[in-house]
Image (cartoon, rainbow, N blue to C red; front, side, top):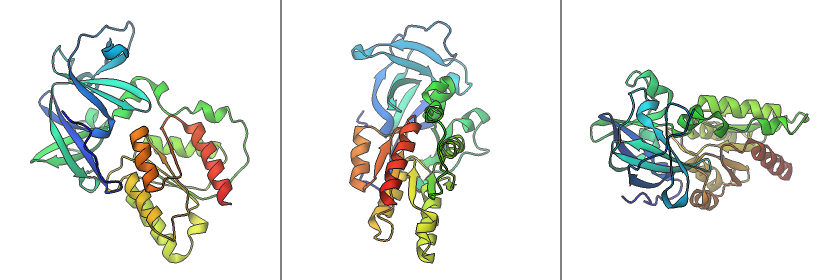
Length: 300
């Protein structure tokens, strides 16, 4: 199946691969997928997390296989089905699913936050729900799934500790990140690094509304001197936010950093075409601080 469908930059769209698990419909952003292969025998890993089926080596690359059914508290997968091999946060991970149904192009505007329509287990690891062909498809938060299994794959908070004591910096920074946990961790990390004038939002639309309001009031300089944005967010994604900021003469000089698990070579090219001033993978919180130091210093 072709998972390399190209999208025009900054259109606020994504390609969702719909797959089936235990008779239910789930989705994953195609940008995370390297390939889809038939199930292969795996080698169990002693004392590993219950959701880790084992490891296998297609093309001499060791890959960890995760049992999504177990993650969703729906039992344990049997042999068969497919592996969706993904790459995000510089990790190659295979997720075991029953079947793949197809690829859909959707707008982030049509993706809503999960609520009472999903189970507690699904709600904790889903980024949103979209209606496709009269079916509700739950888009899973694969980064959180992996981080819950192995916290070492998450933000490297220790990198901030290693920077030592830093002075207070009042430069106003606007953050767009839909994950409540990551939003809090980013804010806490930046505060520890000395950046204390922070405003955080849950998606690109909220961030852009603040930018437009400040622009209309003539208070951009006082309120927004740097923007940090995720890519995957409901309503408006980070690429659309970047495009809107960089196409506006009044805001194009504001440094914008894309901080996302999706930052790979292909996504970097898209970000560069949109005018992003920097792009970093999610675990690199130390490099995020260094990049802010550099960009804010240039602006000041």
